[in-house]
Image 1 (cartoon, rainbow, N blue to C red):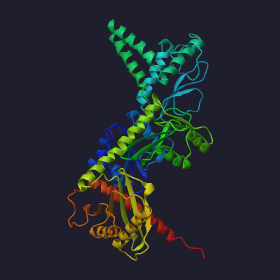
Image 2: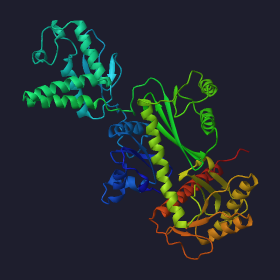
Image 3: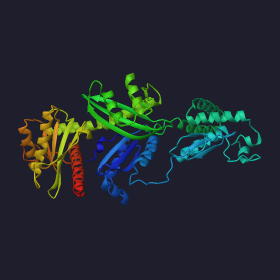
Image 4: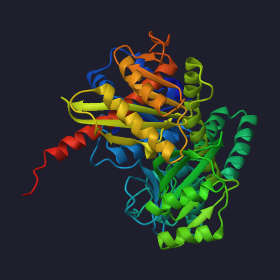
Length: 519
C-alpha cells in the first residue's frame, strides 16, 4: 500500500516496486510528492505507464539536496536495479565529463569514458549546462581543442578563442598556468575568479557597455553553477558508509548510505530498541556480515578498540570520520534529512491509527497475521512486524500449520496466534502494541479467544479484504473508518505485506514438495 502523504515536497528519486518487492521503475523529481502523486491522479496513461501502475504495489524514495543530485542518483539506481519499466540502454555511459588531457600543451575536450590520462571533471547531467560551462572555461583561458596542433594559426586563434601554442604565441609555462586555473575552476575553486569578473562587469556597466556586461554576467552564472555540490557523484578512490540516526521514544531510527567511489549505490534503514551502547552493538552485527568500507562517516566518535575491530574485519585500515563542517558534514546531514522524512512521515500514520482506534498509546510495534494455502494443502501462516511505521523484517515469522487438516482458516489463525504469544511469554519478551488479523469477524474471534486463554490484553483488530472493513472484538459492525483514510491505508499496507510474506512461504513449500526424493 502506498501512502502519498508520507512523500515530502523535496527533490529526490522514487522507486516503484511490485508485489515481490522488486524495483520495477526508478524516477527523479524536483518535488517528490507532486511527481509521484501525479501517477495516481492521472487516468489516461499511455499503455506502458498504465501497465506500470497496474504492477505497482510499493514505493521507496531517497531525498537529495538538489535536483542535479536527483539526476545523478537516478542514473546510478537504474544501473543498479535494471528496472523493467525504465529505458535500459545496455551500452549506456555515464554523463559526459570535461577532460584536460596530459600533453605538453593540454587540450580541453568532452569525454564519456575515463580511459585516457589527464584530469576529468564532472560528470554533468545537463548537456546544455555542460556545453555552456565547457565553452566558458575554454574561452576564458583560451585553451586548445584540436586533436593535433596545426603548423599555422587557425581561425580560433584569430578570433581570440585560443592562445595559439601551435605558433609559439604562448610559452609552455604561461599555458600551463592557464591550464592550472582552468582546472581550479572546474574543481569548484572559483571564488577569486568570480570576484574579479564581477568587478569587471560593474566597470563595463558603469561605462554603459551593457552588452559586454550581460555577456560577462552569463559567464559568471555558468561558473557559479560549477560550485553546486554534486554529493551523489563525487570523484573518490575509496568506498564510504555514511550513517546517521534519531533516537525517539526509546527507539533508534537509523539509516545507512553506502557510497562506492563517490556514487551512492544503496540506502538501508533500521529500527530497533534504544540501548546504552546501541551504535557499537549495531556496527558489530552489521560489519560481521558486511565488509567495512575504507571510511566510515558517523555523527559521533568510536572507541579506538572498536576502530581496530573494523580494521581487523576488513584486513586493512578503516578510517572513522566525525565531520564538523564541509562536504562530509553535508552528506551526514543529508542522511539525517532522509531519516527525518523517511521515518517520521511514518509517525503520522501511527498517530492516525492511534486516533481512529482510540489506542492508549502510539502503536509503535504492530504484528499482523495471515494464512495462505492452495486448495487446502501447504497451509502456512505468516506474521510480519512493523516497528515505527516500517517493516522490521528481522522479526518476521513463518508458521507451518501443524494441528489443522484441510481448509480451516479460523483454526489456523488460532494456532499461529497461540504459538507466537505463548513463546513471547515463555521467553519474557515484550508484547506488541497492536495485533492485526487478516480476515473478517470469524478470524478475529478465533484470535481473540486464544489471547484470552493466554491472559494477554493487547488491542486487536481484523481487516476484511472485500471492503477493507476493520473490526474489533465485541462489536458486530465494522468501525466507521473509510478505506481511503490514512489509518485504513496503513492497516492495508501491513496486511498486504503479511499476505505477500505468506504467499512466498507457501510457494517455497509447494516447490519443495515437487522435488522427487531419492530412494
